[in-house]
Image 1 (tube, one colour):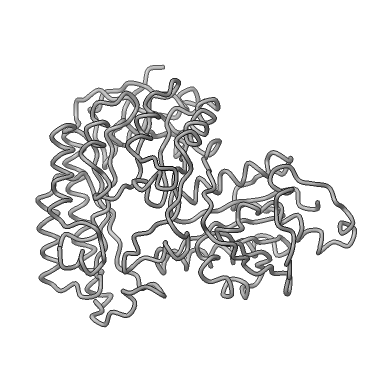
Image 2 (cartoon, one colour):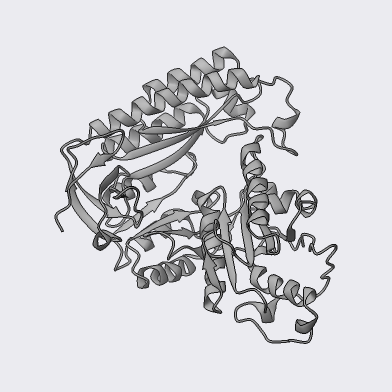
Length: 456
């Protein structure tokens, strides 16, 4: 094996991050040096996203950046972009390997094979790589111009992943794929049908994370509320089981659909031992007409009920919402419905996304296109509203005592962490604070971040 170093770069969701972290550990386990993406490496791995046109643009830019850093390096492109548009990626200069979701978990084995094909001295080497090499289907490896085309084997198998060694918090993938088929979204096309492991599988991975000294676990997936369909289990049963784990006191739920966030789940989190008061609930539009056109599975009335339920039990919880602006057919009147709905809604902040046309979606065929100029104007209004709501949320927490888990970053002499309800806190950098939960008082709010002194 000729390559001695590898650099990873991921785009998009926390699922991508968890998967990239798991893949990088396979390289570390056999002695390959895992480097920062901005350094020179023998291999660059880019985990891609296609949620928006901007995400695709960033993926292409990363490929060009890697090729510029080391024109002789192997470049592997994996993930959603690779799944949907392998031919486009194969034509890019420097790209040697393109693997979609079906093949990316064999990344190391495929790179070793590519390395042998490009080096006559290695062609007779049959040394096995630890991991899944012995189970990998070894036929149909047709490399054209140094590029292995995407190999479609179906997206019906759940591959568990979790991160550690990258941040003090660990992202634990509990589910993959989606069966919702919203009219604007390509994720079901890229990641396949909804699937997950079992509760026993998740508990086993969580214990591994805990054994590595991680203090906080974030449950992630494409549609996590859909957990357990194949095993006859469900998300409510999973979080009850996770709450019994010893050695961990902080578990967060990442984005969960409002129709799958039941009152029972909210009530359990409010009284649980380990789960934190933090919710990320996609809204997408505050107009029922647009929600129906998006093929969302709820109306704004149900969404409001979920927020009110959370506030009745956890007044200080952080609640974030996703909103898509400029969906085809969104008139001024429909936008004002969304704006007015959000103004009255007791949420902490917004993630605002201008609608991005995606190939092979129903929305791409809709003719009532909203001009980019109007999308920007509407996005600006919602960004302003988000800043106002976040500032109010932070002000409501002034004077409170919270536990903060500090990260390892050092930015101009400061490090940061987050409270139980996801309030950002920073303090003077001290390496002894990394991966520690420290009780602090929130009394000095500076630009949407609390500055605190930690006596340690």
